[in-house]
Image 1 (tube, rainbow, N blue to C red):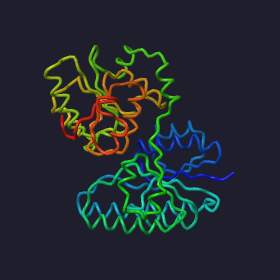
Image 2: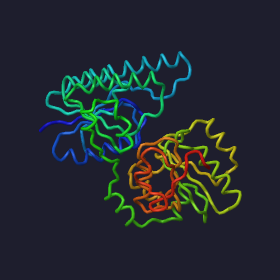
Image 3: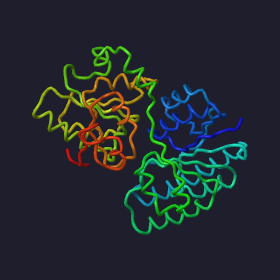
Image 4: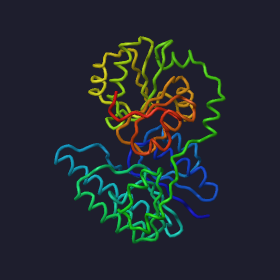
Length: 349
């Protein structure tokens, strides 16, 4: 049986991995599957992978995705990137690549050499989840050169997880490569959603477990607590609503804990017990545990400045939770204003 290798070399995880897991559940019916990821990956992510019942291999080194602000930190980050990609190349080389397919979470605009090396050995797939945003003409030209180089390889294949992402790359890839890009939408597991909706939940018990305010109208958000996700807009809206209605509270669920500085800034909004931050490892090791918690939400609000097609929003909508989001990127492919949700402009608290 042929083998499919799914690989990434960074610790952060989210919708991209959930999307891959949905693909893996189908692919494993016909292929042997191996997942390659860094050894220090999040325990909850590893539990999700264990539930897939596939082979796992670990990289020693991981690439840092933290923003670099100084020249020194940028140099260090680039060196780290080169070293981690080189290790990944050596690691993947131990597989029978000639009889494998590699689906890797890296883009040619960042990791051209690694992808060219793989394309010379096997069929390589990537999924493009987001458009890349506005950049200088010079950077755009560099991206175009890199994507035209990778377009020469018949062994390179690209998926897009939404139409907005696909459209962005028109003119960057060659016409032939672009026309072959297939949209494979970010996925929600209908069986998990059905199970969550049919499960009995003890609301009082969940409210006590997560220390949520009782008898409040609850606004939920799920996502990394970062600027791109509109965290301060969310809290500004919470402050405004709390000033006119004491019966509302706000909950943010993230797969990583914010810094002490972020917590201090959040306190300045004066929400006190009416803002609750929950990390995903508190929720449980089963994805359905998140769904059960989300069923407490009266409204789901994801007010990002940039997005692909966020799986947290799709899951909230699938659970029947009234949803508010921003009219950016691919969100409008799911949220039809005043039909399937409410769209606002990014940055409008």
